Image (cartoon, rainbow, N blue to C red; front, side, top):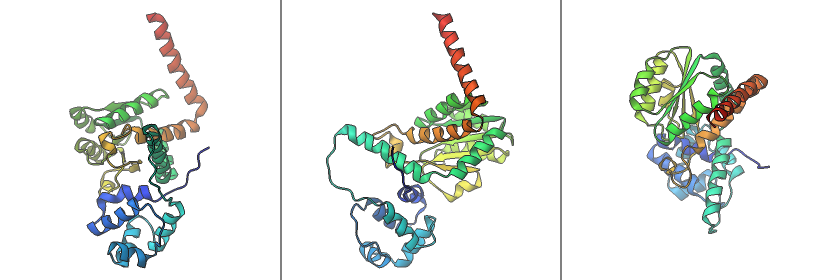
Length: 276
């Protein structure tokens, strides 16, 4: 059984675009460092030519009280990396494992519980995304409609704009965007939020501005250039998070949801027999 321990690296990655230039310099050091060393504020400040006050502000922006708390957590999960050449298969598998570890680090159980609660309370869910993120939205529809949720998925920009205006306090709008900058997705969520809908953004980037139109911002794991389909399928982090929400949803009414799922299987098998 795999052992997971929360790391602050994915937190740094998720907030990277909101950092100042000095803070990005600090972030680059901790993201790229591969050797154990003296991580005291004085030593790190001298190494990367920043002030100790900047280190403290950086730590606070990452959600810690100060640098001492930040570096304690960083050292706790720090693993030295060696220059070992691996084959392509192991590289892909290691990437999957890295993303699973990051997903665990970003996981917010209380947030998942809120989303599940809201899904039970709303009458309809609409998920949208572009490109690979659109495939994740389509998979969400396929998964959740089979357990009785009234859900649609959208990948077309014009349909997103039109559907956005039909939201109300009884609906939920879910947007998928690794970058968190897809114009159509942000418009969809903003309009839905303005009309009282529950709005959820699944993204790898954390920005304070999302609070203006998102009920929840679900952070997903990412690696550099993941949104360009490098190494593995870019929708993978979305699918992992979706499975977590799905499992939390069905566990509340496991028997009833299992019955609905079995009914869909019987319907598909029946259709197959008729065709044959």
